[in-house]
Image 1 (cartoon, one colour):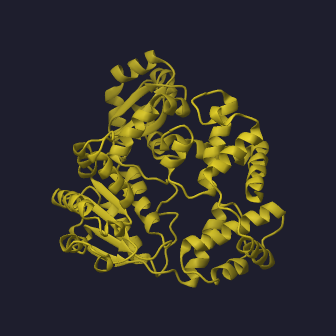
Image 2: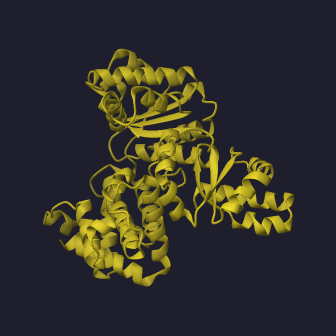
Image 3: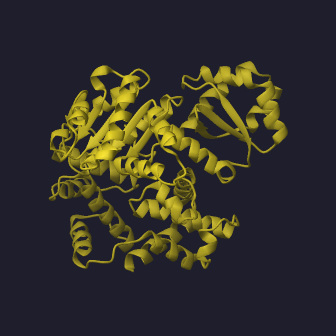
Length: 447
């Protein structure tokens, strides 16, 4: 359940106390939450008359009920749409643009609850949780929070967990997550003929309450970008806004990093994340197997956890290959299957799967024209394959949501999230769809 759905669910009991049963049944019950944008919850209804009536005659009571829901949000907008998908089609570009300015987590599945804590990362976890809980009034000792460590150890997960926590608990705050590469590219675009001007770029990054920047080691050797980042950083710290940074190495080891920037990075809480120990690796594998609805014996999990390779990403990748091999060959997960699956994947080196391969395979499977699937047509025979493409690309590849949307007709990241989650949920009860998607996966992996 998304944060806006939880917020509305906790608001309804308060509204039942303050509006008449007739008004509740006639109007309130017809409202559906579809988004949170710019510190407001967005509600949709199918009738403009209903929307106008609610906005004009029930605003005070709804705002008051929102305040009592303990969600740090007290305003709403009503739009006319059939459902969330219709809302995204009608208002998606506008909502995405505003959400980008406000800041939005890339992956809603990366939360504090889904992060496995062990001796190697418990300090970082506690620090990140403290930052999220005090985002509206940052603790001086935690600002900035600089996290460093090798690849695949959960740094990005922690950043997005902070963003997701704030989005759920403190939705009125502007939180922006970006990679250092995105910051760099957007700055360069603003200096050219991009959509955003230098002023727009600065307002975007300096007008937030929480700034989360991933992989700041890529500032190395980029003097112009370092200067812009330095001023952005200073502006936020002076305004008592929270900054969290990650890097694959400590500031002193980042080549050609200006001393004034290195000093700023080391001015708050400065900590590293270490590779997980065996017990934590097993716990991570157990959690991931549960997420994939697959029961794996502890002996098998231990066997995988003891393999070479310290980073969590590689570990989860091995488990994913084994789980898929189990489904593909319809065999239980044993140590023998682990050896076969990993040997098979390491043996014959296949060409790397591309997003275009997935789109082509889905179009071929459903006998539809690719131009219609990536285009603007809203016929059901094109919409469902389009949503399946989004689901499969996000499931099988590690691509940013905005990239997935661009591949499928320039759709925004919220449409991708909606499509991915809709197909994932539908597969739980729709046996036909579940079988079709697994058949497509088999075709792709045999290419």
